[in-house]
Length: 366
Image 1 (cartoon, rainbow, N blue to C red):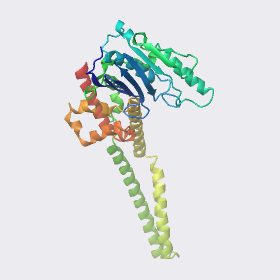
Image 2: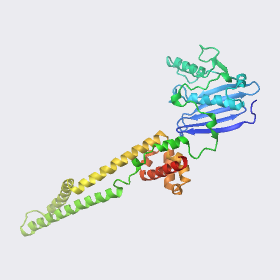
Image 3: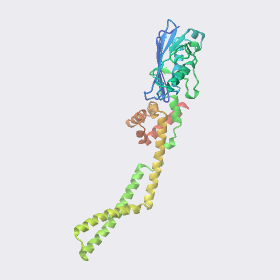
Image 4: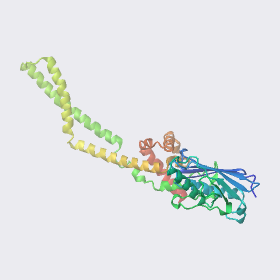
């Protein structure tokens, strides 16, 4: 009944969740990463198969217990739901077929890692009992937090008590390790909510427009200051030379320098109220608002998916060769590493990539 030649390494990725599952004639190992592509906080399930006695031992389920940030989030349920399906596959049985009644699945509750003081200690034990009995396990000693447990495979239940957390994943939706689809369905769904118009800065003043306006204002202030200063300078020389102004030359030099800077500040303040200055302020605000909106949209897109561009990059760059350039590779890497500041600093490139990605997804999947 057991497929002794079975040796599969399977993988499944959707959004922020990645699962690696291996099955052979002796072991079933499941590693669930709830914050993919980050590898911290993973959940591990280990099952041992005894083919001669038709038994499967639950060795351990770790990573989602007390003190973790993913406790009570449904990830343990996901893992053991897959474990049940993997046992059926390991023994080559039809799901819920009568032969499954001859397979015994057993294990022992463990308080390792639980809180050391009450009432948290008891809550950990009660939570664990509820978890395993919800799958159909019977406890040998229901009053003991370290009781043995067992059930026939047939009596084990695929647990769907947290439907809002998508706790059930069909094992048939996994692919062989290394055969990942070039683009995943969840990533296409994420792409659909990208608002291209929020990323398009072509309709607002460019950086060059702002630089040109600022330079024009600065040049105007400088010319006005220089003209006013020259007039005062000539007038002072006239008073000194022709009218006998009784002031030493070094004092005049000091006063002229101070006067120049004073004039410059005065001119700048006066020019704040000119039409040219008001125009510069308006286009500066217009661009700042557009950049801020685009930046916020990028932050939402990327953070909700633990990075999106890097997931779409192979799909898009294989169809549009211009995206194989170094700047887009860096954009993809920044998305993978979740360095969103770099993405926000390159909004135009981000916009072009997402524009082509949407075009491609509409062409290929609609």
